[in-house]
Amino acid sequence: QVQLVESGGGLVQAGGSLRLSCAASGRTFSSYAMGWFRQAPGKEREFVARISWSGRSTYYADSVKGRFTISRDNAKNTVYLQMNSLKPEDTAVYFCAAAFGGSESYNYWGQGTQVTVSS
Image (cartoon, rainbow, N blue to C red):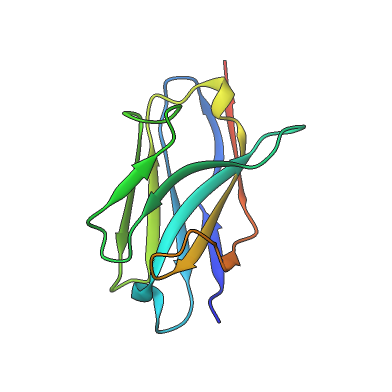
């Protein structure tokens, strides 16, 4: 069982930065690939970024590539999403999720943290 708790969301002006954190419980955090997703009002949840269990491989949605960076610290059971050059269209609830091993299916989800970017 893995429990995920996101933090770091808030209100920021366009062009600004935020860093989201996702703290995981359990001793097997390093066995999971981790992902960030987001859901804007009235829209479906969409993929943002993913990092492999080792941290060596990362993947990004085209909409955030070059602006967002995903990273992890397995010693702290935490995954991060550094968001720079934020745009109003980045406004959404951001969720972290855990996928065991190399699976594409995410087994565990956090409750989400709100990010609002004002123009």
